[in-house]
Length: 322
Image (cartoon, rainbow, N blue to C red; front, side):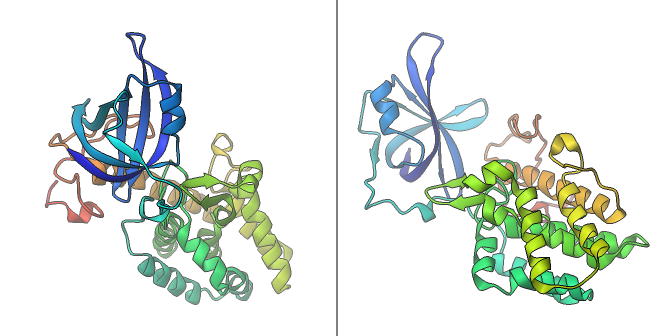
């Protein structure tokens, strides 16, 4: 039986094969999400149990459906749940947080920024990261709403991961401009600070929906460059190229594909960190005894987790040879 407080992150009224209606919901706390089916639902119940509401569950039965835990109750009974009032609701406790240590991410990024020698890149970075209010937002917002690093601290975690991969590549491949690559890695998703906001969940801002984080990021870096004044045109445009091309392919949202070795490395580091996070998230949330996780729509496949499922952080916690 499941008890406790949960945030409704998705709620849709659907029709069952037998002609009855039911609510298909997903509820969440800091540890993750659970699917819910509320049978025998109607319009009134759908309007009551809407996305963004906080509910208190009371002895709700958990079942296994397609190798996943699922909660179910009869919508004609009000004993299974209670909807919290506005005065009772504290949304911060229900949103997922990065499984890592935000302080470590910040210390790592600060150390990398201190190692950059190009004076213009250092000045541009300081426009953002010497601003305590900006840093607070950067360390808080998710890196995406659903696809990867979709939790508080997700942008900082993702940025640190991309920077670490780029740093390793800069030390391995000859002729890579390390300062350009690492500055681009730190700033590649900077527009997401204005693209996402945290209220009673994660949602996109009007600016983010209308312009997208690539355009917003370029605008932010252009204004920072003008603010510090100096540097040559090509130096500025190479940095902006890393930002606009980091999605790699036009069909993936890049207005232009990578045309420099630094842009190539950044794109692959960005994609690698995002895809790896999807695998790690599935591994952390997988609770059944099966060595295979259920089909994941985001990846488009079921992945083999072996003995690594349910770990708190990464594959480093898995037994040798798993």
